[in-house]
Image 1 (cartoon, rainbow, N blue to C red):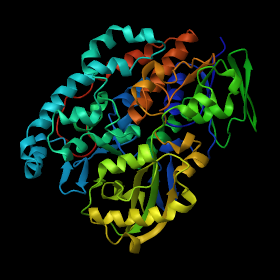
Image 2: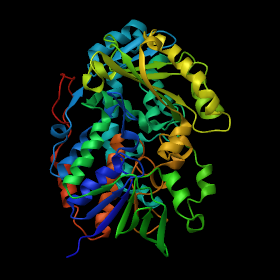
Image 3: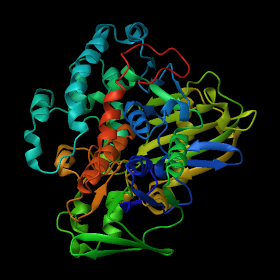
Length: 522
């Protein structure tokens, strides 16, 4: 019997996870990657012995990827050793106050008591409530939504009491915490979705819950090492990965995609998985007249996430007193959010994230040196901002802002530097509007209203990644690969039992405070 052929566009985390599962199912899999390395936004940037994650640096909720590895016959923690961080990160507030965030509830309450005594004990209540919420919502996040009728599934109806569609994440957190700094401390994770917590649905209170319940991990070598190892495993399983091969055109028979063309050749297949940025790929690759719901004009009207301004700094020495992850919350946080999402201008007082990874992982820099990864949330591409003019001034403003977390001598210690602006995300990484977190996650762009896992416009096409259901962030991107792989295999009449069995075989570990190195798999 001939193997079914599948071509995957894009070797990002969703494409690589799909490749592992489809190869395990017996498909003949080829990945076409436009860049010179795997990983997409989770690739590595390497310069003069320094190694940086390009995009995600937080590795959260390993359960999903662990089950995917298990379904392919591998163990995630054996393949990519990780350390659980404590503190998970340090939060500093421009208005005063600091939290070294930990899964130890007593440690957190002792810190909260120093600046918000009225809120002591509220974190435990928040954790208890969101433990129930996640349990209710897991079936929704793990199943496809192909039509409005899917909203009537029993799992959706069972979770309805937790939805509160008119309540934002910020409003949800205000039910627990009276101090606005604590509201931000447990709502800033909306930035993983590229949104303001005051515009993001209350459902996403589960994001910070996942950090405290299941931990924040650092894969040795960085999050990019996860994608690199996935690519190696996929190749061990027979997957062909072709780098530097962007798709140039497609062949259609009616609504069915039958082949892709690159400068190197023609690739026909029984099914196609698209892991490229959805909005960029669809508007550039599929003729506009072939689309009904996702025409160029309609895509342009959608709401997109923010972007990020990035500095990757190789520095002399090591900031030993600075934790692995650090988030500085602007003193004018509300204005900072308006600047990004509404006014589309550069903030005068930006919030800044800094990863000081070498306090955990010295393999990332030459001896005597370390890395700083600096991220500033900014507007996606907009006529208000000319990045050819604004990039240099924002660099200086960002380095000035680092003094707020104790880094007042960075300029003198920089040995190598790389920069990415929203224009670069668009041109170099093929991300629509440079919106690094894809389509925004408002209620009008979730579930069946998002581009669907079995793509509704073209037959034989399946979507994975942040642009489809369930959305952005590594755990749900991995979940999108599992959803789409199930649909594809079922449509090709291939068993998905190995996926279902692995999902049942590794239950999440009970909550416990972090213990240090290489914990048991959660």
